[in-house]
Length: 461
Image 1 (cartoon, rainbow, N blue to C red):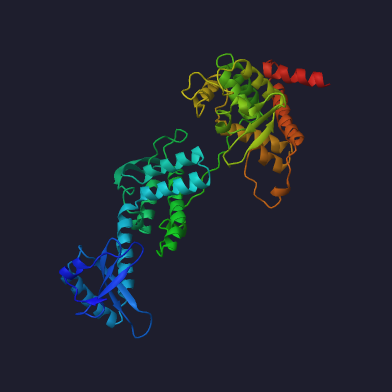
Image 2 (cartoon, one colour; image 1 turned 45 degrees about the horizontal axis):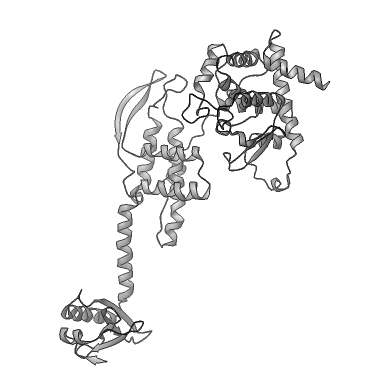
């Protein structure tokens, strides 16, 4: 159909039947046309090219554009097409550019960290609480923050100046440059920690590195996704590797030395503490004997314990795996006492805690042991104590790693079948060794834990 496109003419043209379209070409401007659907009338330009397929350019809907406006736009589009300008490609590029600008404004560093946590940590890896807490803690290193810088004076660190670091969380993450990253990292490397480390004043050494590791990981996560959309990005945190800013953290070596009297002192202090706080004492003993992480023990439920088979099922541990551990003699005695005094579904139910179980971190209870003369250690130091004893007893390295719930990812792991008897022997060997060491360094030690194991040995004999 052809006609002179005017307002009156367009108004008279009926809409097309549902599911069909028709086109009316303008008699004044070749290539200018009106495409009519069931609910709308749209101005278009249609031009046959000398080489290649015909081009059709959508100008806009009638009502949004007047006929005169549409005809003027059609003349511009036809002129560009005649010159070989790809009007459609230009429009797509303009749209993509506008979308990129919009995304640049809304996709902030906070957005990036949230996306990384949601997709990579929670959806893909199951959302370990400790990891989520660490990522959330990362934010405080990239928000606006006052930072006290330290300087060396006479061999000691002293307060220097206070600076204010700008807020990056609400900035478009694309706008953060490598130079800014290394500058901020270096500021924190001179920063005063919120808590003194071992009572000694010295710069932040580890926590800021963790924050920047997550910062870098978030960029590594988003870069391939942006590449799929045609956008090339660089990780601004790469500069930290280029200039060797990552520093290895000091490996912690604290443990209760079972080859010294301090072990018997610690063990007997814990036994004595049971008269004051039986739940906390049993919790610490059980953690040592099962070489368990605190996160696995404090939330342990009775539904995970098989008293008849003497097994404990640790579900969804730090590495995402489930483990079934046999119970040694003393560990079993601990659970029998807890079962007799159970107050809720948790093995180590604790009335003083809002969660109903032993609270996260037992610093207070370890401090109480110190008041009784014991060496101050943490829950993780107990795992180090157990592992050191297991190595000294020449227990198989793979068995030790399994009992520590470490990820084993070599090619032979697929063929390694767990033997409960072997695991029980390993745990029992370390437990018996501990008891022997306590007896060796405290001839008058008469704690209930000692008597229990001696009675078991006598009965076995």
